[in-house]
Length: 241
Image (tube, rainbow, N blue to C red; front, side):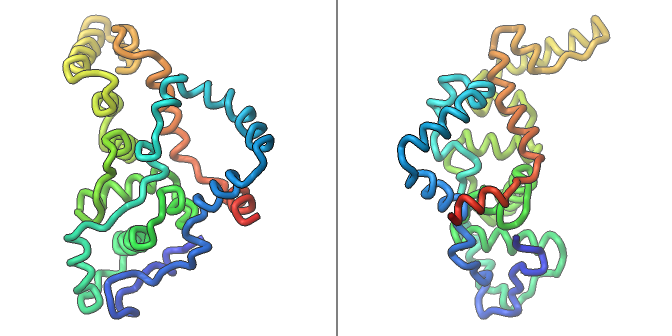
């Protein structure tokens, strides 16, 4: 793991780029996928069968078919913006302050310069997915890195980083319209005022027929899972085999 003390220090370099990590340490997720792809077909069939039932519990058949590499936030690779590159040219002279925020920025710069995926960043920096999304969203807002090309990946990033609520997430994903969200919010207010009861927005949208329960269970489960640390030891053991 990369501890904060190992983060990039501009005073040690002649450019604003962080010292690179060894290649074997960077692309851990890609090496893991390549390792699985190299397995015999019958072994991959066993893995598929073992995971199939769990996937069906959280994803509809259509949503599984709709998933693309661009939409999957775990495969997002941050890219430095032009403005960030301009900032880095002067960083060797003007040292950023030594604080937690600056340390995170150095790690984000390192990830972008070495084309790490979100999964690679979580493994190398010992971050949860939620923490990684929060850091990425902050640095997108500060124009250090460009947002994901996929609107679905950006919506997931914003939701997991607690920047938008479930209703807005579903709008950005194209599951409901702005008008449907407004109607659901009005219904929520009516239930609160008329019955003095709180009803979650997801249940209201389900009762109104706008979405199915599976539409929300998937992202709610992902949000819950995003707060858990990755058990990287087993992943790295497979990936290094």
